[in-house]
Image (cartoon, rainbow, N blue to C red; front, top):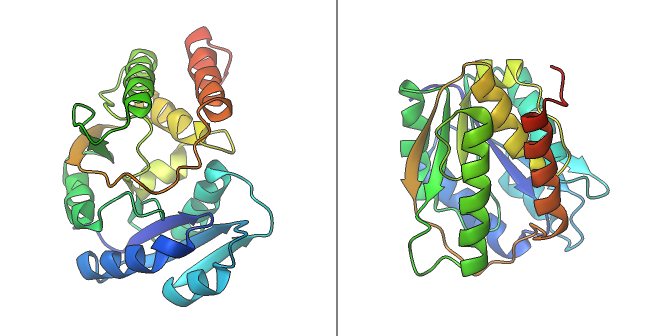
Length: 225
């Protein structure tokens, strides 16, 4: 496993699930340094984030997942991370898969925890939306992404230093994957299972539209990088 390893945990109103998520992470990745990013939570969970994480970045107002990840990546690099893992704080990602995701960095620059959208547990609207967006992302980037909206990812530090993705919300993750693929960074998919039931803050209309705009701009060559 590549070390030092830093885990980025974007947090928005994650009080009910946060403590278990961090506890499970420490059980499976005992040497990891965990950075929590409080993205303007309004549920009073900030003291808990500061208690369970090794270091915390605080946004007084909600800025979006893209901003949270960008701030987390910058701090991870400042800490000397050789690898970075991102995982959602809502309890949908099983920390038991974390070691296999990080270990897969031995054969790629980026690893994406990929959900099985054929499973009955996946809500139909999520399955359809992700299949479409993942296919579009592959077409635009030329990569092998099978789950473009998965937030369960691992990166080599070199990738984070060189990829300057745009976007403040969920479109950041799509932009990142496309840019990384175009720059020649490799990626692999690692199967994971997901625990549905926790509320998702992905807005199926506004956030989906932002993702579509990213895909269209790349396809049309509007971004000049």
